[in-house]
Length: 112
Image (cartoon, rainbow, N blue to C red; front, side, top):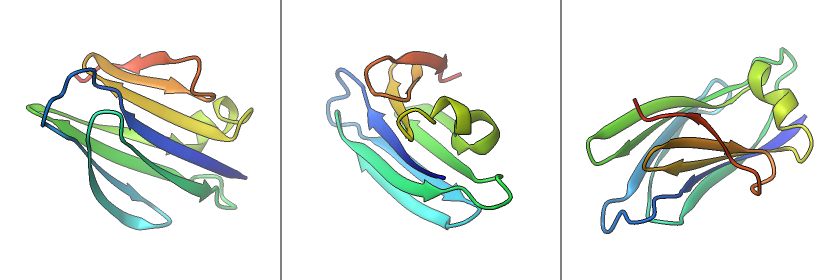
């Protein structure tokens, strides 16, 4: 099964401070880091492996805030991302929002 994962900087006023993202996965190893300005995004396509244990972990940093989270993990995301084959994250000042269609966003968790 193939999915698209996207992380979007949804800060409404982060001026010159970028949202820094660094991701790793079991299949691809270190995927490198990016600095996302307001409205920028970082995305990739993935295929789940035959063992169905694909896992993509990202660490995000903005100012003094820092949080690691599972950007994609088969047990959690294979069903909730299935309709559009898309898992999107909108990162805002108050936390991390998930959507499988980029229309309906639900807060999954806070920074702390």
